Image (tube, rainbow, N blue to C red):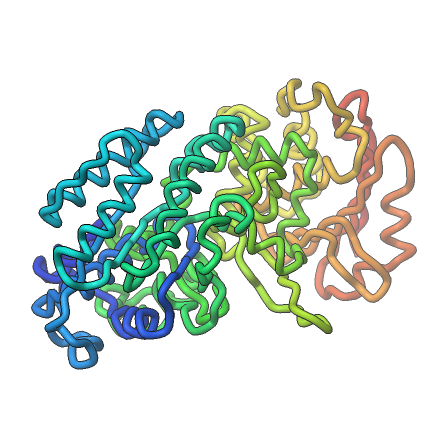
Length: 505
């Protein structure tokens, strides 16, 4: 079997090193033939850099790297184009460091292309000069490939004033692409976020976004067919339905796809199920945003949004749902057609993301040691189905929430807060739970399935008769077998359970 290309983003290294390569060259050829200015948004670690490097080698005419691949007999390898490749590194935290980084990148391209630019002060002008001189020297129009165009902005997302300064500097830089249209054959930009055209792309309004174009839904990521064929020898004997539940589920309106990083690390680590992709980046900023806005966490399980929301990212008005979608924590579950346009139903793509994200929310509220103790108590409950043990788990959970989660807000007065905490808690431990469970009589707050039994929860704050509400509305009728009806009243002063009642049906 071929070696796995874990962490390798260079096309030539994969081919020359005889690593496993999933052929994306037909998609690349179609893209080149159909567009001139293209933008692609995908979450981190999704194969954007490898695809961009594949484009670079196609345009440079490196036919020997494409022997046996789909594009080999469909491309004119005699024509070679000068390629300007731009990829941003870390450490950009001001307009000045952006300027230095841009010059470093431009100098690297000058060396590779054998060109010397006269401009030494303004990177924007140097970029324009490089484009024109490359076209003149090679007697071919220029190809521009920009990887992670938004990284300097996203690296400063917790400092919005600085992020805005950097965004404006990058907008001026990208404007040079449109201004030099006469010298360009093709331009391709990738990133995580999709900034509105009025912000970073205002000077590049001819850029076509293929991020949710069904023809290019599989441009990054592995499909189920890839796993059933190319990866079959590496996954022999595996429960493929379990692999699918853990790592499949990303939807960009093509096939449902896997994150490549997950699959490669899963195989490399003897097929142990872990949160490989999630561990590569912390969602701390998003967790803080959720807490700051007292967001109702169960809503993320089945979120309905307008098309415009998933297509823009606005620094001046950060939208949690848009950020979660574009960064890969949520994905499209289904399309909801309207009279004009569509809406999307978003949700967690798979078990890895759902459990890890909710566990991160819980970790932001309680200490690791307390979390482990509560985990052990929850396992006892799952093993026995003893509702008395469950009451102890819930009381311990809310008693462990740090005091600063309640300061400068009144979230403890709302049912949604308690439902959010319990939802994050159960999902974070991989328990099967449904938020706002719909029946023909209405919605119940939470439904938990454990040990072959069903537990239906209704919450109230300060007073009320939640258990009586479950009885009256007969929410339990949609389930068979042993069912436990649980009514909980929370006391906002004590920030814990004041009454816990239950009965078995």
